[in-house]
Length: 114
Ligand SMILES: [Zn+2]
Image (cartoon, rainbow, N blue to C red; front, side, top):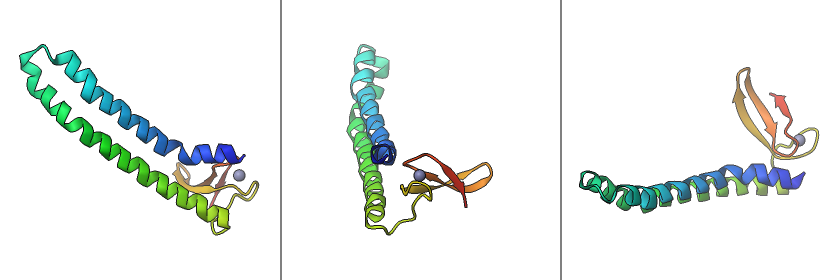
């Protein structure tokens, strides 16, 4: 149960980091390799080479910040200072759906309306 909860807790920061890696590879390798022969796209190639590390850094910062927030949630839950799931005691997150606000348990996956 705890493994699933931690996986749910850190999956979005991890996806953000992977998206940054894919974006970096696209901008720094795919575009220069695919368009370097054409003088028409030389400006695009230069700009993509310049902006690739910047965008990767931005994705890294977002991932680290997001992971810090999730770690804070986990720390509060470990100390017993956070609201818990009524059926399993796992970490819950606030969500907004079609029928209004509800809480979702990251451990067992159950939803409960507020
Ligand atoms: Zn639960």
